[in-house]
Length: 183
Image (cartoon, rainbow, N blue to C red):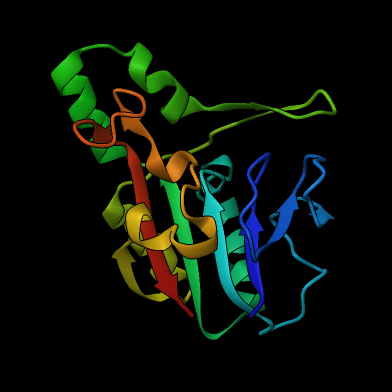
């Protein structure tokens, strides 16, 4: 099975091919994730991308998802995590502290080459489901990190597990929208 971890940054998932614009030891392909010329059509079983889709604006994301769908096999899974606007709005209503939301909403990712990337959009379930449907994906549903990161990747931690308060996975508010779809 060919599984891609797109926009992985410093995080490494066992059993995945890692693609990122930054340069880390575990990166298999140092490349922007908006195009995947190193992979053939219908060659990938699964794509995982955590908190990278929001770096593309609402127009760019159409072409990005079209490209990711191109490399997926029929029936292949696209598993995404993005900041969850609905959950973040609930946090704001409860805490009235904008500082808790600036990172998830606006994001700032400095690259090793000196460039800086910022979030360009945000999603709730309905809006991301619509974008995925427009790109040709189906069977959208939420996924739970507790069920996905098992076996070789038990204990894996990334922004799909973003909670406020930070790391309070038992009592905090999950602020990551974790959604998957199928080609």
